[in-house]
Amino acid sequence: MRYACLIYDDEKKLGSMSKQDADSFMGEYFQFTEDVKKSGHYVAGEALQPIGSATSLRIRSGKLSTTDGPFAETREQLGGFYLIDARDLNEAIQIASRIPSAKTGTIEVRPVVDFSQTQESPRAGKEAVASA
Image 1 (spheres, helix red, strand yellow):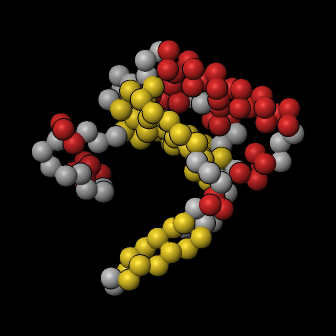
Image 2 (cartoon, helix red, strand yellow):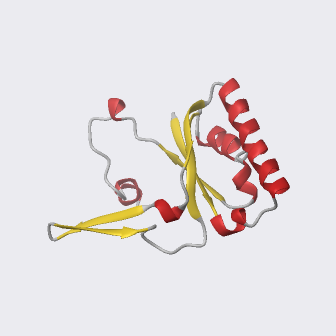
């Protein structure tokens, strides 16, 4: 099963690191990426540009509006992701726990819907309602 590992970190904190600490942190990322590729779990991954380059959009009453930056002010910002292939959630968590930002921010692990395996479109909260 595929899992998205969404990486949230505090850009201000990362930006205030010394060059030596930032180089070390990025070295950990390069090593993790190499390791997850060698293990066969890697599907894809990308770092995102800083939030200042983001544009959020909404369509309400048929009108498009855009806002510079992220939609909501948060302490941590989405900085990148890995898409991995894991046997189950436990293995995905074990892999994601080695992402360097797990020590400084938050890693959200979320299963990816495989539309080739499903007959019905997923709906937000559907599983929660069915299990209640």
